[in-house]
Length: 352
Image (cartoon, rainbow, N blue to C red):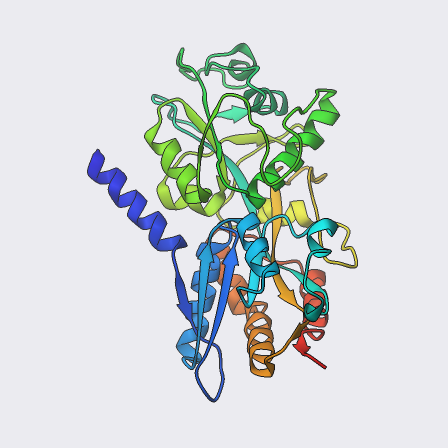
């Protein structure tokens, strides 16, 4: 069993580790990015595919968490950042004047799933909105609790303590997850005490770094449940719960991302492109879906750096790259969002 765990950890680290890629230019150039672990497997694949056609530019992406990525971007240590939470006005206000502002680019979207380790279950567990909120509030502490059992007739739910696994780092995945939990709690007339942020004071949980760390800890802990991006659960073979959506239907995360696409339908697109969907309304929607943003300066001092990054990101919006996103379990971008992104990227330029 230990060798299996080592193999899983190796696969996760390989998927989220440093990605080297390229972008077309007449001379070698290097771009550095850092931030969210949520989209890291997709960014690595996108950038590798681009490198095959444009080997003159190397890009390193470090999946260090959204909070750390925002800090490195703000400090000017990287060409671009990445965040599953976008940026708050307070964070934007800290940007250097030479940046000319920030472009918040929702380059992809994905499902946040509740993966679990409950020995003996043969079918995906069904969790009502009340059940999964109360599990993370630590008001439901056992897998055979009546609130869980009523939606899982015939399932052999063990008399086993629930261990909640959360993020130890400042995480956009945590921000998106707590945004959803707060919205659901409000609808249930329940107080969501942890709050909404990239890092919150969880009650009685164990924590790990990154989506990969949470996935590994769930796998190693019988009785565990935790929130991770769909692709990490798929990669490690962790089971995923069917969650009750706003229309009281239990929806499983799906392979082709259709339930995620339904969640993004008709979402309002604000001027700054910080599109938030805390509790989607469609009856066919998976309930926890988030965009994830690349953070770009509006102005770069190096013209080639600006042109290279713009070309790279425009390529990521092409149909073939969106198909890759679907293959890896991310959600295909709605056409209106892609159109807005293409227009927004025209603002990325060298310092006037």
